[in-house]
Length: 152
Image 1: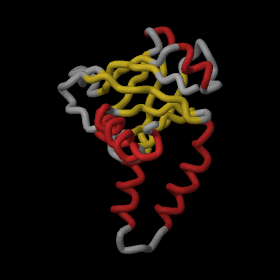
Image 2: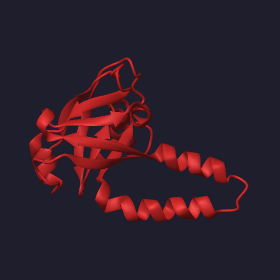
Image 3: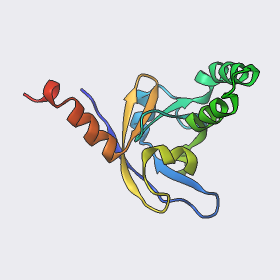
Image 4: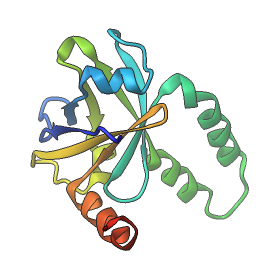
């Protein structure tokens, strides 16, 4: 059975321009992430309204290789590709000592479609060893997209 959790993505902190939300301990355990320690994460922008959180160590090598490949490219759109890469992958940090808060840059949170001065509930789901952050709009669109396959 699927057991998501709801968290509230806070509005932008004026001091550091970041967004914060909490991940319940149970989700950390289900994702098999180390418990009780600060974790460096990568927030991957997926479809609009959806972000996938990875443990940085699990994706770091692949991201570095892809970035080097893009930097060596001679394609005319090299700079645009590098910008798209930078927008897709952002750093985030999980702090268990701060009620399980994740600090997410406003740029990363932008993909959720939630205004920086607004707070909104988001759904957190486990997807293998990642945790996905889903906006209300994304959830509604997914439900509508799969209506014919999920209704009794």
